Amino acid sequence: VNRRGFFAIFVAGASFLRAAAQSLRGRLRNEPPSLEVNGQQIALTGDDETKLVLADARLNGLDFEVLGTRTSENAFTIEPIHLRALFVHRNGERLMVTYWCDVCYIRTFSPGLCWCCRKDTDLDLRASLD
Ligand SMILES: [Zn+2]
Image (cartoon, rainbow, N blue to C red; front, top):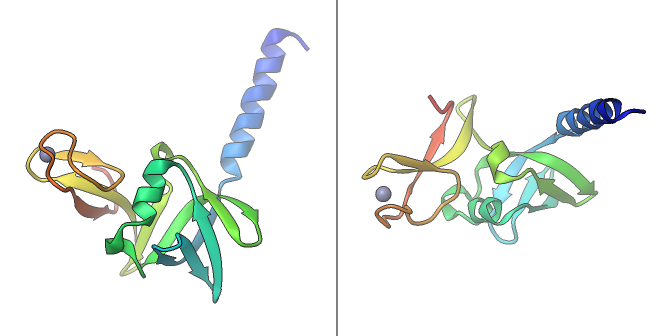
């Protein structure tokens, strides 16, 4: 296989991996971070910013969906924060988890202080980013 052919195989493999992201939906628990799915607790992990979202008390007990990979019977690894893999289901809508500073009009994807004005950002569940 020449260099270009190898690259094509790599891209095909990468897109296959992306397509393989699984969905898991249940009730979110902050501590330890987990989803209750049909009475079973499935431990959640992800990158640091994702873990901050999972620990957000405003999301505790909600109907929650994550995208990623089931790594074992009782464990699930969520995709990196930039892939937007965290959702709340409410009133039949699938809402993306975002955070908003109404002083600076800055949107972020994990909770905490606004990097501009240091105000604590508001949870802002959104059907789209428009
Ligand atoms: Zn701000």
